[in-house]
Image (tube, rainbow, N blue to C red; front, side):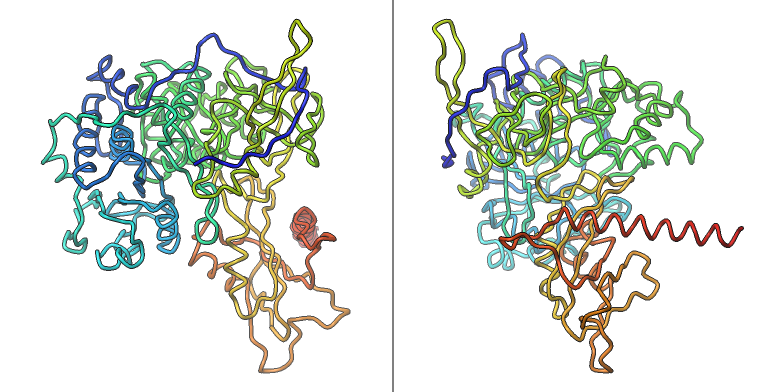
Length: 629
């Protein structure tokens, strides 16, 4: 897939920052790296979960058995396998089975609805779907996959809804084991191990480090999906350079709370632990603060990953149990990523969970995913205000938001561009958006004769940033409108498209508002149709901002008026996109600010929304003080 890159010309002298390293990039496949780990640490625990443990040798043997089955099913290199699993040890086995055969792993969020799953499978034309009998979701417990995805489990439904799908590989993770007759014409994971265990998989096709091995969805799936293509080289090297920044060794036990279907956990969890021969600790199938705390204590975890909302929940769990820093004495470092880290949170983690060595990380899926981190010996101010320095073999550059050919000096804010081995190859089946994201620049470099020309590919991150005089990167905002709620990407266009299907809604804009717990939460600015009645009864998160001086939707015109509530809107989104995408705050408005070219000015909506929330909070405080004065 050769993307149509945008080209230009720049002078980059003294304006870009490249992190150099004495260690060269590795030129090998993930399967080669696993083979080296198995040879060196065959009996070391590779994966530890509440289902038990698997050694490196067992991972190798089980992934051989699954790879043989994939090949027997007719799968070949570059075919796609969609994987919809929680953080199970079997997920790691399936990943390694795919990379041995050269199959592209396509992680699917366990929070997807059936509509989203069908759309994702069809976009990447997956040949096989791997899923578990029970799907576990944070704070919600488990639900039957048959209940969630029953529309595509029967073979006849698969043929009509997802015609590319040849087979389902199913892992029975039900506590009391499921009734297997409800899953017709599927391959069972335990049967695969029983039939093929002990047989050595022989690779017949030549694989290269530049082969695409992972496709990650980075935008919503129901309308216009965006799926980033990552290679053996980008993922494996990113796992290694990030692991070096953490000083990982074979003695480490890495507690991985984020889901493996994210690049964060897949690259920096599954692959980093393999690259360094240490143990991947999976506390639970879906995030559970109790399971994380228990796992750290019981298994003496030394490294922990998470996003701010996860760490907040873990602090609350530890507080409820009266646990102090001594309970977490084994922890020495970790990564926190996904959204801004408030200084007060970092201070609490240092005091309560022994995490003074926690590193900030900046990354994005298209970059495999890690771009920069703070360092273990950084001063506290560097942790509070920056995302550290670029990782080895990574270049960062700040350009004008209006002209990405114009590189800015250190200290100037602009859009962050990233270059290096870590770039995705492009978006699957989407040359237009690939060309918008990836640009090739002709660069003028100084040499002894004056200058020479070269070229480099850069990825436009859509993030506003500044490179400080000390070379550290500071993210100052986001140019993109993606909402990041607790480390999860939420896509306003999907929410808007769903709500615009409602008969009583004229126009809608979804935006993210700042939140101390989640980093951002979803809000919706809604213009209802004329003669629609708005009910805000007992809804403290609903705001009516319509001007009363003009005729508006929502004026009571008698019994013929239809009623719309904030909960109607939340339920509509929740039913299609899941709970995390449902707007917490609803703002009823008579107009939405637009630019001269008709684009919604979402920054103005954010300002309005945050001001109204502050105003309501202040009025509550004043009423409370009045009662007690």
